[in-house]
Image (cartoon, rainbow, N blue to C red; front, side):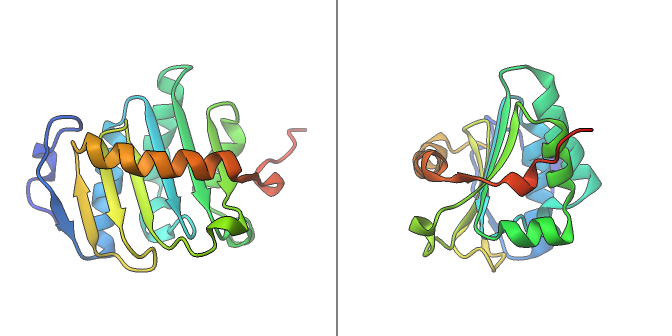
Length: 171
């Protein structure tokens, strides 16, 4: 558990936070998502259920998306099939908020990519060097690192594939 998490402000608190457990990562991901006002970018092997498959996180993502028509949430994953097979709150949310929330599948070009990160409003970062582990770092105000990670994210996004199974036809 992270002490004084409520004292951290997106875009203001620049201290680097070391994380080591799934609980710490979950708390930080939720705090960053709740404070985001414009965008969220998430990339990894899959949408780790321990971090991203909760009612609270889904609500925070929804709040970002509906706050303004120009807001966006973008997610890139390797293992899209498992998400669909086992269900995930964010998949259901992306099906309802199609214009501003999109989940895409990383192409084989990124088969060796094994990092995982969340970027909030191009400033806040939760970064894990290895997607299957929970040790990493976070900051609520690290625009330099966010910019570097977004550069890679945007390149991968342009080359990614839309995954039809994420979209369900509305009847």
